[in-house]
Amino acid sequence: FFFGTTAGVRESLFKYIVVVILTIVPTVFVAFTVFSRRGSSCSVNPPPSSSTAEGVSEEGLSRATSAPATSATDSVQGDLVHEDERSSPRNNNDTTPGVETTKEAELQRQVDEQLQQLAGLHAREDALIKELEDLRSQASTSRRTVPSRPGRQRNRGDSTQDTTAADQSWIRRPESALVLCDPHWMCGLGCTTHKFLICLEMAWTWGKPMMLCQPEYPLLGGWERWFNIPRCQWPYAANAQRNNASLCISKSRNCEVERRRLHVRKVVPTPKDVIARPINTAWLTKPSYVSVVVRWDQHQNALKAWLKYLRYDSNLKFASALVPNLVAPTPFLTQKVEALKEKIGFASPIVSVHIRRGDAKHETKYFPVATYFQKVDAYYARTTPCAGNCTASAKPRVYVMADRPYVFLEVFQKYSEKYEILSVDGGKTKKTWADKSTTDMAIYDFILASQADYFIGTAASQLGRLVTEMLCVKWPQDCTQRVQYVDGRRWYLT
Image 1: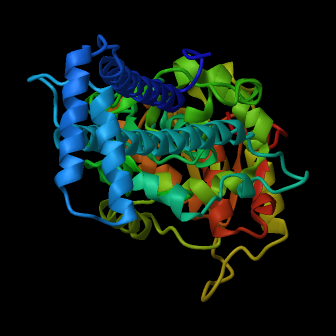
Image 2: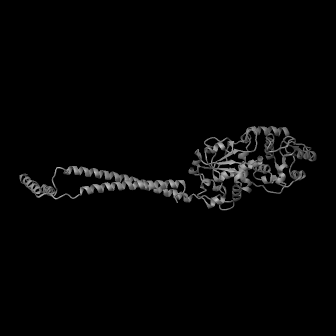
Image 3: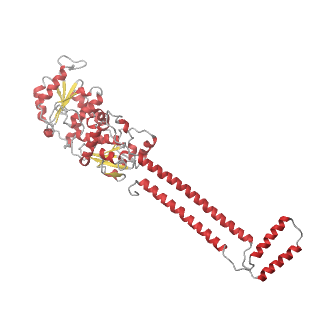
């Protein structure tokens, strides 16, 4: 039982044992001292000799006859004194009655002091017992269930929005727990952002601040140069507020520098673990000093279990509420995008089309360019192709984002007469996430496509789903009506 309890309960048990020992030892010592002195004072002395007794009687008799008459009370006291003298031996080593009274008073004073100390120890013992009972009651009531699924007894957000002062104060401590998000996964912009988004949703669910580790995605100047995420500073818990999506980013990959200052665990319990062992997993779902490292290559099964249990994998509204915190453009990126929009003539109304080739053949079915532009024709057939002061000869605008130059060549050859085709570089660059010289173009494509009025792509593409999430930020009421996936799938998060 002792080693199976939590550290706080073990500490209280240890204090309780020490108090019991400190209570028993002084009691035994005082009792031993008192009984030993009483035993020495009550020892039997040899009876006095007859001559001595007679001398005492004669002396007492002469003293009584020569003394003046006193009151009845004095006579009785004198008789008692004489009787004591007759019954006790007389020798040179006898202690006078005044000295014996002084020693008894001193002994009584020591006994009183010991009793006062014992009373104080008993009071402290009672306080420790009460503290132990409080800890046991807290341990029994600390079973926090994982957030309920939507559509049941309570909303998903209610399970993590505890705004009491006690729960809010722990995040101000330097040693407070964090969720360290280390994607550690070689993938592109959309994939890396979604790994961050999953971590952010888990941190929001567990009620912990979050720290992003520098990703593997090779962005020139680092993630924080392009997206508005502040660098983490000590104390790390001060960078975020509980139940708030704000976060910070580490200055090192794998958060190696920050781990040295934190108590980190590398195991992520699943929802089944939290339900089956609420006490052992309370460090994850309750305010604590234990941080957790979330890595997709090691914990993807546990993370997928959380996404499925909480239905975050199909909750587009929740994802679109958090993703702007990860990809909010910095002033540097905003300036670049505005200059690019003016250069290529990007203006509303406009349709963005994402035609992905490259490694997409391993993830989804191949769809020809004509399939995408059939959706473009259908959109412009039911909307006004231009807005403001535009002439009848103005062509509808289509912003094309693709990773292979031959896709742009086909688009320009077949559809440039009907539509005004826009792109970042005219389709001259082969884009891949592993090349630092082209990662900035992927960012420009993502930002511009997110500012369009309609998006056509595939749900299998992480970047396409990321654009969908940003469109739901811009058009929260009818964002699903502004997205068309040619593969027929719905939005999902994984």
